[in-house]
Image 1 (cartoon, one colour):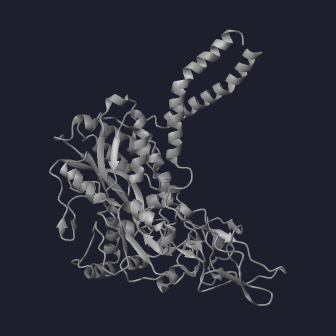
Image 2 (image 1 turned 90 degrees about the vertical axis):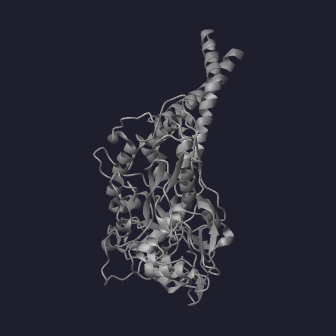
Image 3 (image 1 turned 90 degrees about the horizontal axis):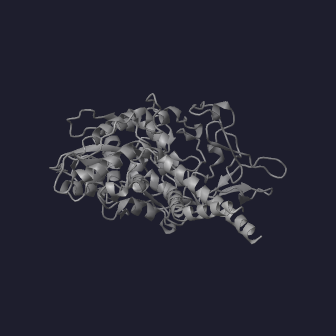
Length: 576
């Protein structure tokens, strides 16, 4: 009996072991296109630069650890990454802007060592903010490019400004001071934002640069100029600016940062107005649509080979496009030096093959948009220039990139939904949250809710000017329902007698008010369905946690598995 009891106790242990082994096999299968080699076949390499793309790079280098690839990376900012690569202190750099551009009358000279640009990932420069109304987090803020430019040049300094109200007809925002949070270090994100302002709103940007002591026309800059006494706050790195804004004490702040950081912090981002008159969030799909308009330098001999001209992206007329979309690039050596050997080139090449194909699958989850087929193909050609690379002949149709299908169609752009009517510039506004606060809607005023009917709920349709909204409708917890356009339509607030009550808003607190049976204004039970967030750390179960558990499970299985299986088989052999 004792032996039978022991056998029954062993069965659950065996089942757990087999389950762990099965999960480990599946986990290994998802990365099957990575180099299958022993740990001692690769030498470690190091890189530095962009924080804009750091979240993607960090995930990819964790993924390839199991294949013996040791990739060290420091997110020190694009400008520092270019400097370190030029000085030979790192094996590769990462930047959103190329060498050779003039910044505040200083030319960023290319390195003397031969190099090439290798596209990494696409994404949207977003605007994460910390704003509350009546103690509840606002998650559906909309702004035009001109309004954003005026905020980050000190022209608009208060959240109650008429220009912000015009962008947000469904909100009554507090008369609170705006605190723009900019980068204190040389940043590709700064370069992307300032390139956009200098192209789209040169008068606003040049006037600010002149106040900051910069020569004009100001143009693109990696170092954001801060005018003394402007009320701006400067922080280092993407983690610095996102961490500052996400602090509960820093209400009223807004930054510019890669979309991925707002996702990790659990905070919303601004919906930016595009040329078609829609306010759009920088999702993987809206970025993919926008970058269809990018003009890529396809001249191999050009110093900006594979770099994009983003002016057509800013002005894309596709209603789904996010205007401030761009690419990030790795700077790789194309010749050996005193500090870069062919052994390092083998490691760098293997890593590049991984992130150009398999690694792109994780881009949307991480807050990025995967590369399109033309840049993947060009990137694969660039990898062959790295000295020491074990060159591969990869069938682009089997690259496992979620952006394109086997026939080369841009899948993300093709399947991207049209925006909802409530995202159209005009009298209406969606209540749905964005980015890290996507599941937290915000109350909008009754007059800003599109009326029911097919004309109001069809995505991308423009409402007739004669259409008027239904009165007395508010968004609140448990009251929203989805329409065909992905927007939310609330139920009508009624009194016990069934009559509709017209909602009003307290201008001091922003709270939605209702009228009771005596005609007195009272605080409505349907308030902003948001939850305040007072921490900067990542929330929820993250991809890296799953990978860590899988790795731990595989290690345990390798250590304890063989003796457990042998013991079980021995028991069976004894007739148990």
